[in-house]
Image (cartoon, rainbow, N blue to C red; front, side, top):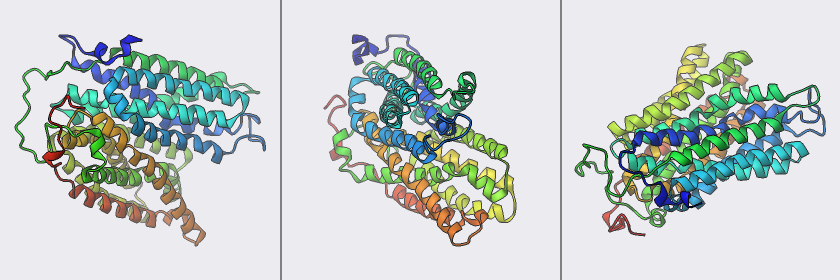
Length: 448
C-alpha cells in the first residue's frame, strides 16, 4: 500500500495541473449522491408491503434520520480527521473515502435485506458519513496548491461536483429501482450494491490520478503578487492555533448563517411552491431540478468571482442580496408571480452553494495554505449545525403558523423574515473579519 503515501503522489515534470480537477470531481460527483438519497425514501417504506406500506414497514420519519446522521458524521469526521488528511496527502484520504462511502452502501444493502434499520444507520449514516467528510475535504488544499493564482475557481470546480452529484444519482437510482423491482420486491438492496460498486471504481480512479505539486512549484509565468490585500497572507497559521482566533469563529458564523438560511429554503422548496402557488407535483419536481442546477452553477460562479472581488466582498453580496430576496419571496405570492418566485429562490440557492465553494479560499487567504484542508474540516461543523437549525426553524415555524389559523400560502412569511435576520448576523460577522496578527504565523511553511 506504499502507493498511498504522500511522497508517492508528488507530480513529476510535465504533469498538467488540469488533471487535478477531474480527480477531485471523481470524488465529489460520487459523494454528491447524498442529495439524491430521498429517491429511496418512499421505496424503503414499502420493503415488506411492496405496493404500499404495512405496519411492519419503516416509517418515513425513521428513514429521515439516515440523511441527518450522514451529514452529522460528515462534519464530525472532517473535524476529527482534517489534519490526518492534510499530513497524509490526498491519495490516502481519497482511497479511504472510497472504501468508507462504498462500504456504507454495502452495509446498508445488508440492512435493507435483513430489514434492520440500525444497520442502515451504521452503513449509510456512520460509515458513509465518514466517507463523505473525508471525500469532501481531501481535494481542497491540493487544488489550492495547484491553483494559487485562482484558488476560488479551483475549489469551485470540485465542490460544484458535490452540488451536481444528485443530477447523476437521482435518475440513475430511479432506473436501478425499475430494473430490480418486481411484484414481490422493491429492489433497494440491489440498487445500493450497484451504486456502491460504481462509486468505488470512480473514486479509486480519482485517488489514482491525484497528484500534489513539488515543493516550490508555481504556475508557469506566475509570480506571487505583492502583499497588497489586507486579508490575504503568504504565511500560514498552525491548525491547532486557529480555534483560539476570532477570525475562525467569525468565518464559522458566516458559513453557518449562510447555510442555515439557504438549507431551510432548499429543504422546503417543493412544498413552498405547491402551497404558495398550487403547482402540481411534477411542476414542483421540475422546480427542484432548477434549484439543483442553481446550486451547482452557483458554486463555480461565485467562487470564481471571489478571485476577482475578494472573499469578504463575495460574502457581503450573499448577505446583502439575501436581505432583499428573502423578504421578497412572500411578496411574489401576494402578486401571484411564479416566475419571480423561481428567480428569487434560484439566486438564494446559488448563494447557498457559492458559500460552500468560496469558504476554502477565504480560509486560505486568512490562515495560509499549509493547513487549509484541516482548518476547512474543522469549519464544516458549521454545516452540521446549520443542517439541523435551518430545517427545524422552517418546519416548526410553519407548523406553528398553520396551527394558529394562518393559511398555508402565508405560512412562510414569518420564516423568510427570520431567515433574513440570520443574514444580518452573518453580515455583521463578515464585516468584523480582520487580518490575522503576524504573531500567529509559522516561521516556516515546513514547521509542524
